[in-house]
Image (cartoon, rainbow, N blue to C red; front, side, top):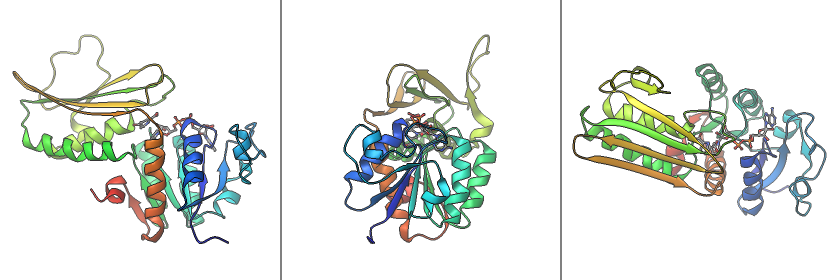
Length: 269
Ligand SMILES: NC(=O)c1ccc[n+]([C@@H]2O[C@H](COP(=O)([O-])OP(=O)(O)OC[C@H]3O[C@@H](n4cnc5c(N)ncnc54)[C@H](O)[C@@H]3O)[C@@H](O)[C@H]2O)c1
Ligand SMILES: O=C(O)C1=N[C@H](C(=O)O)CCC1
């Protein structure tokens, strides 16, 4: 029995799942103890190393979350909102740190996750990269320094398989801009413009989503004034960035009290 934390990766066959498996296997600070896929997936029962086209790593793929989480000190979860809500309850039952990267969560999903965080540590962020979390801080600072003569627009680009919009990152940036301005994002958010929309409403925070090809994730926060524009930009070119942040969060959470945390907590920003 090793004393470094054992980690389960959910959605193991997904884009982020596979990247997370590689990150955990490459780390000497944690070990892989489980790889979870949807029930009926053809990887079930295979060794995860072999399923991913490499050497065996002695971790069979399972579709039983209870069995997998019982062996884990942390669960890293980049799946779908419905799966993540289920996993939040089960990870809390197992007293495992639950790192949530899943985006597209509704207010009801967030309530369920918040309830699970009464019993266990949950770290949730729409983006686990250092760069984006720094951008969140900068966005709040710039929004606080400028008045409503500067229109704020968040523009995001992602690959053509992404299912939610605006992206989790865009919403984090929009929340930060709204906080800087001292308003609630719900009151000023404007996304999905189409048709005769009328002139832009002063004070609104706009969102635009581009989907195409294999774009990993790009975000601009535009502050457009009269005669000048400020653009804060982050461009991700490698998903390893998100996986590295998630593993860091799983380790950080090991000695924390139950509650809901984010990457600003983990990174000390
Ligand atoms: N927070 C971040 O830094 C960050 C970074 C990248 C992606 N994401 C988010 O992570 C999520 C996944 O992204 P992706 O590109 O890997 O998607 P993906 O579709 O490639 O992977 C999702 C995987 O989850 C699996 N899954 C669904 N329900 C499941 C269940 N009940 N049990 C086990 N597995 C289940 C699917 O089979 C799939 O393999 C999205 O919400 C995305 O926006 C967040
Ligand atoms: O590929 C995705 O999906 C991504 N999702 C996150 C988001 O919604 O912001 C982070 C970037 C990649």
